[in-house]
Image 1 (cartoon, rainbow, N blue to C red):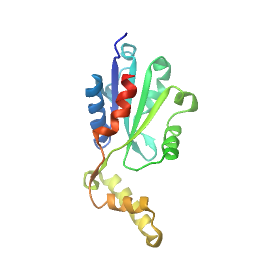
Image 2 (cartoon, one colour; image 1 turned 120 degrees about the horizontal axis):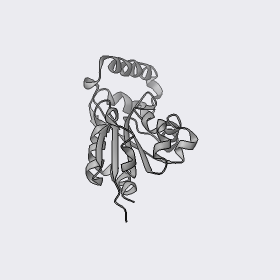
Image 3 (cartoon, rainbow, N blue to C red; image 1 turned 90 degrees about the horizontal axis):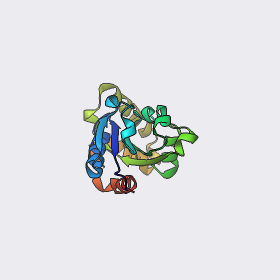
Image 4 (cartoon, helix red, strand yellow; image 1 turned 90 degrees about the vertical axis):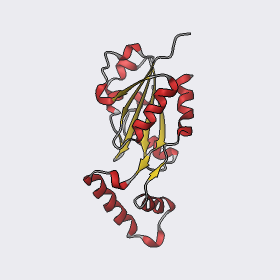
Length: 177
């Protein structure tokens, strides 16, 4: 049986995607690369590619590296792991991946979604401003807030971290299969 040589590539905005990527690389004995370090000329050495990227405004940061290089990795096992702050249902997760990859690409990619962390105090000025504006918009409708809207408001008042290593077990199983 051929060794499973794994490249774990990540693009992290505030650290959650990096934390997951480090854990995944450690558990599968893979090589860890930050997105900007990846040279796709080296990729033929690997037979499994796992990309971990943070979700920002409906996009998976850095996932273009997978989309643009599908021709170089079409014969490989590919996992794309999106890391975001929101609790998302299957339909929203499917939409997220369809917004980042075309239909043909999605046939070759196994998609996963994990929740990350949020500490508004660690956000840059622009991101903090956007979050505060979103909070204000959500709070305008105080009489009929959904549970998700209530959770969003709470997120901006207290730091949260969902980066639980147990959440990656199904990803590890896929990579090792």
